[in-house]
Length: 106
Image (cartoon, rainbow, N blue to C red):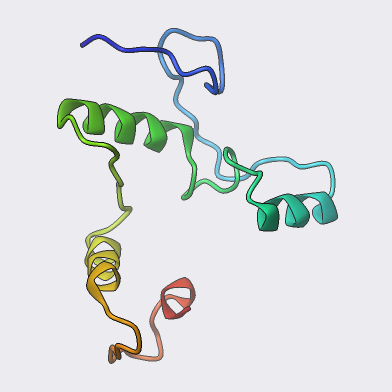
Protein backbone atom coordinates (compact mmCIF):
# COMPACT_ATOMS: atom_id res chain seq x y z
CA UNK A 1 0.00 0.00 0.00
CA UNK A 2 1.43 3.38 -0.95
CA UNK A 3 1.77 5.79 1.92
CA UNK A 4 2.78 9.41 2.26
CA UNK A 5 4.82 10.30 5.34
CA UNK A 6 3.24 12.82 7.64
CA UNK A 7 5.55 15.69 8.60
CA UNK A 8 4.18 15.60 12.17
CA UNK A 9 5.44 12.05 12.71
CA UNK A 10 6.95 11.25 16.09
CA UNK A 11 10.16 9.88 14.63
CA UNK A 12 11.98 9.72 11.35
CA UNK A 13 11.75 5.91 11.22
CA UNK A 14 10.33 4.22 8.14
CA UNK A 15 8.10 1.93 10.20
CA UNK A 16 6.20 3.39 13.13
CA UNK A 17 7.77 2.08 16.35
CA UNK A 18 5.64 0.48 19.06
CA UNK A 19 4.96 3.01 21.81
CA UNK A 20 4.52 1.25 25.13
CA UNK A 21 4.24 4.34 27.30
CA UNK A 22 0.99 5.81 28.59
CA UNK A 23 2.37 8.98 30.12
CA UNK A 24 4.31 11.83 28.55
CA UNK A 25 6.65 14.43 30.03
CA UNK A 26 5.91 18.15 30.10
CA UNK A 27 8.09 20.86 31.63
CA UNK A 28 5.53 21.91 34.23
CA UNK A 29 1.86 21.45 35.09
CA UNK A 30 0.85 25.07 34.45
CA UNK A 31 2.20 25.06 30.89
CA UNK A 32 0.57 21.70 30.21
CA UNK A 33 -2.87 22.81 31.46
CA UNK A 34 -2.70 26.06 29.49
CA UNK A 35 -1.73 24.24 26.28
CA UNK A 36 -4.41 21.60 26.90
CA UNK A 37 -7.15 24.24 27.18
CA UNK A 38 -5.85 26.12 24.14
CA UNK A 39 -5.89 22.92 22.12
CA UNK A 40 -2.23 23.22 21.15
CA UNK A 41 -1.32 19.76 22.51
CA UNK A 42 -1.98 17.47 19.58
CA UNK A 43 0.32 14.55 20.33
CA UNK A 44 1.47 12.67 23.39
CA UNK A 45 -1.22 13.84 25.78
CA UNK A 46 -2.18 10.51 27.33
CA UNK A 47 -1.79 6.88 26.27
CA UNK A 48 -5.47 6.24 25.56
CA UNK A 49 -5.89 9.46 23.58
CA UNK A 50 -3.46 10.51 20.88
CA UNK A 51 -1.36 7.36 21.06
CA UNK A 52 0.98 7.29 18.03
CA UNK A 53 0.20 3.64 17.26
CA UNK A 54 -3.55 4.20 17.40
CA UNK A 55 -3.23 7.23 15.13
CA UNK A 56 -1.22 5.14 12.67
CA UNK A 57 -3.86 2.38 12.60
CA UNK A 58 -6.71 4.90 12.30
CA UNK A 59 -4.95 6.56 9.37
CA UNK A 60 -4.33 3.29 7.58
CA UNK A 61 -7.92 2.06 8.10
CA UNK A 62 -9.27 5.36 6.78
CA UNK A 63 -6.98 5.03 3.76
CA UNK A 64 -8.14 1.45 3.12
CA UNK A 65 -11.80 2.47 3.28
CA UNK A 66 -11.10 5.68 1.35
CA UNK A 67 -12.69 7.49 4.28
CA UNK A 68 -12.03 10.97 5.56
CA UNK A 69 -11.14 9.68 9.02
CA UNK A 70 -11.36 6.68 11.34
CA UNK A 71 -11.80 6.27 15.08
CA UNK A 72 -10.70 3.27 17.13
CA UNK A 73 -12.16 2.44 20.54
CA UNK A 74 -10.52 0.58 23.44
CA UNK A 75 -13.70 -1.40 24.13
CA UNK A 76 -17.04 -2.31 22.66
CA UNK A 77 -18.84 -0.32 25.36
CA UNK A 78 -16.98 2.86 24.48
CA UNK A 79 -17.89 2.35 20.81
CA UNK A 80 -21.57 1.86 21.74
CA UNK A 81 -21.60 4.90 24.01
CA UNK A 82 -19.93 7.11 21.39
CA UNK A 83 -22.48 5.99 18.81
CA UNK A 84 -25.36 6.80 21.17
CA UNK A 85 -23.94 10.24 21.88
CA UNK A 86 -23.40 10.95 18.19
CA UNK A 87 -27.11 10.50 17.52
CA UNK A 88 -28.43 12.02 20.76
CA UNK A 89 -30.31 15.25 20.44
CA UNK A 90 -29.99 18.16 22.85
CA UNK A 91 -31.65 17.46 26.21
CA UNK A 92 -31.64 13.68 25.60
CA UNK A 93 -31.58 11.48 28.70
CA UNK A 94 -29.78 8.19 29.22
CA UNK A 95 -30.26 5.98 32.26
CA UNK A 96 -27.02 4.56 33.66
CA UNK A 97 -25.70 3.16 36.92
CA UNK A 98 -23.72 5.27 39.37
CA UNK A 99 -20.73 3.00 38.73
CA UNK A 100 -20.29 4.16 35.16
CA UNK A 101 -16.75 5.24 34.28
CA UNK A 102 -16.28 8.86 35.37
CA UNK A 103 -15.36 10.29 31.94
CA UNK A 104 -18.47 8.69 30.45
CA UNK A 105 -20.71 10.55 32.92
CA UNK A 106 -19.48 13.97 31.80
